[in-house]
Image 1 (cartoon, one colour):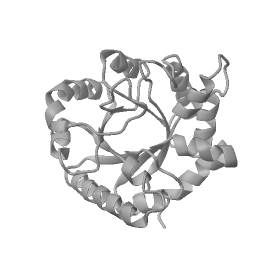
Image 2 (tube, one colour):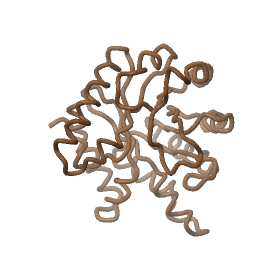
Image 3 (cartoon, helix red, strand yellow):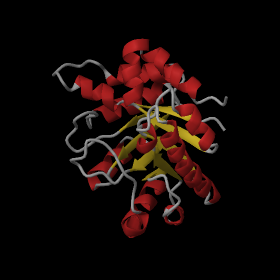
Image 4 (cartoon, one colour):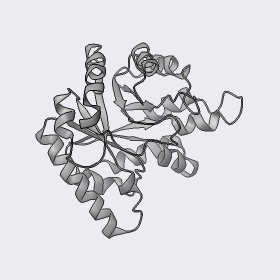
Length: 247
């Protein structure tokens, strides 16, 4: 199985929002990503709209529908009523539920599935009734994955921040990969699809793919946008896709 790339547009939107100007245009860069092989686009519309704005969602949906109908729109966020309404209005193909506090700079931990089970159950059922795939943000551990499966989640997205943070420390990287390997095996046994995201780079993706042979999708924004300053957005998208190919 070869994992696919969903390009996260949050960093592009954050740069745009530094000025009251229409550029860089998230629609334009979403088009470049999809035209160069990305399988989908990811956004995280936070309540303060500090990067993706609510008004971006219909335009991104229209881009996919009109020009890239086989691509997917992944919307991630904390499941408030407002967020769920945004997902429904934008007809998300996948909704990734994250346990973020609105004040958090970025997602940095997975759900406590046992503690949140009864809260998540009707939300998952609601989204799935509208034919949206549901992925739950998860720490890289087998703990609680049985609950996620029982709740009806289709996938989990493993938080790879600790792995990404190991940089050039090979021993630390191997310890984090061992955790991901164990969690991925447990997810596969439960019939859960596996996504991954956070601090993933061209350099660390090949080892992640080897550790997670059932990996379906990675969502990448920060490193991809940073690399694009050097290589350009189109070539950077291709570089990340190549990094996902089996060795």
